Image 1 (cartoon, rainbow, N blue to C red):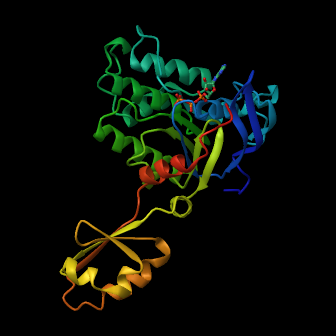
Image 2: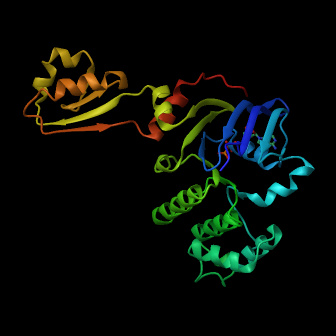
Length: 306
Ligand SMILES: Nc1ncnc2c1ncn2[C@@H]1O[C@H](COP(=O)(O)OP(=O)(O)OP(=O)(O)O)[C@@H](O)[C@H]1O
């Protein structure tokens, strides 16, 4: 595995007339890295994906994917190494699942056995000879995933991949993401459904109106958001806590015995708490990705680039 970035975006801007869909964005994606791309509707997520796919070209800046400019003729040889699951995937309704996948496999230069294996991987073997028009939304999404997984791509772009999947299918989907990552595939995952995603990504970019508001792993995004950590205690009474002036300089009391504390004060507070001999339990709750995301968005200047 080399350290050459799979994707490199350097000061990329994409404008549509007076509208700036992506504004001066720079980022890199390493081999085997999973990057979450998060933002509300219209934030510029799909535009970023289209720039990486070479479907559209940057107005300014440069995009490199697997060593080529994706919008150039020279990029033909990287296309079979890039998998893409669009948002709202749609197929030829009258073809069966396996016919659809065989068709895409042929376009990408892969054989029918590979298509059949992928159908099994996404749990559609029993339904593979049925017309796609009879498929549920979740089944269509799984067929879309199989299409994106064709050829074990080096780079996989997934636009809202878990929309329409039930919790079991969502869990299975993330297992496949983890599996591909373990085999060195780099993945960009666009979503506005954040719960459950954080365990499966290495870093995230938070976008708003084409601007990158934050980028980093969960720890650095948490530091950026600067939200309180919640420490739940058991065995100490609320009045003891309130009267502990040493402790109360660092915390805010919430729900009787829950303490809200900034990360930099966490250790001081824990040292104070363990002095209580009758303390039964301490539980530390860090803000989750969704809370961090909401906080970073709320900190953003209201006037954007559009
Ligand atoms: N071809 C286009 N012509 C004009 N404006 C466009 C075009 N494509 C995208 N936009 C605009 O660019 C902005 C970013 O759109 P984009 O589709 O990248 O957002 P998104 O984050 O993917 O949103 P969603 O979550 O709704 O899919 C939006 O304001 C959109 O209307």
